Every structure is written in structure tokens, then in C-alpha cells.
Amino acid sequence: MSLFLLNILLAIAWAALTGKFEPINLAFGLGLGFAVLWFITPNRHLNSYFVRSLRVIEFIFFFIFEIIKANLRLAITVLSPHMKLRPAVVAFPLSLKTEAGIIFLANLITLTPGTLSLDISGDRQVLFIHTIFLENPEKFRLQIRQGFERRVKEILES
Image (cartoon, rainbow, N blue to C red; front, top):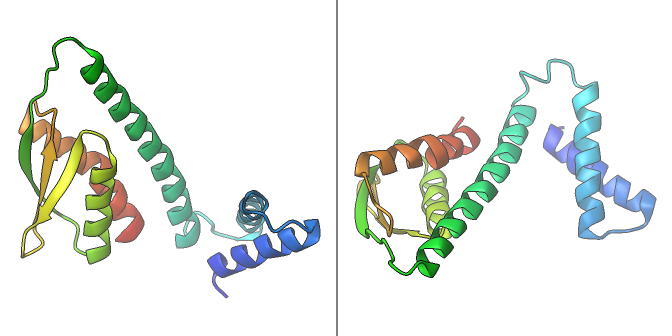
């Protein structure tokens, strides 16, 4: 039985024992089940379930931080007397290979205020991104590559 399925069963068992099948209680049961599985599994640092789960948790915190940062930057720009907008379309060469990875990256970019995924080339090698704050195209590509794309690759393609 996979550890993910076992973790879900432990969360359901927790909800059944407490008698509350509310989302917050199921989430707590999922976390509790993860902790139990962490302690009873040998070689947990080699197990892909634990590695990927920790990467997903790290990604969630990274994405929340990026959303807050982009919102603050956009709010400051909108509220300033002289908006310093530098809109541009940037061609971003993709290193992701799976359809799911490319779509997930495009959606993450669109969810971040100030950026919008416009199109993906026919050969799935380039993602076209519109941004309203372009100072240096290479720096922008590097931020996407080291931030979003690297983490998406670690979660979905490793």
C-alpha cells in the first residue's frame, strides 16, 4: 500500500475517532498521519513520498510569499503619484517536459499579480509572459527559472 493512501486512511480514521468530518479536522488528521508515518518509516529521507511532500509544503510557503510580494509591489505602484510601469512580453524558454508541469507553471505565473501567461509555443519550448514591471529580461527569466520553474520541476518531474 502506498504511503499516500495510508496517510489518507489515517486522516479518515482520525476524523472517525473524533466524530468530525470537517475539512480542518481532516487536514489535522492528514498532518498527524504524516507525522506518524514519518516516525515509523525506515529510510524516510530516501522515500519519494516524504521528499515530495516536504517539497510541496515548501512550495506552498514560497508561493504565498511571492503572492504577498507581488501584491505589495502592485499596490505601491498603483498608489504612487507616478506609476513606473514597464510593460513587456518576455519569451521564456521552458525546461519542463511534461504537459502538467508546463500548465502548472503557466497558471502560477498568471496567479501572480503583475504577470500573465499569454501563450505556449507550438513545440512546447517557449512560454510567452506579459509583465508590467520589466527592468531586465534576463533577470526576469532567471527569477522565473530559479523560483517557479525549479520548484515545479522538483514536485512534478522528479
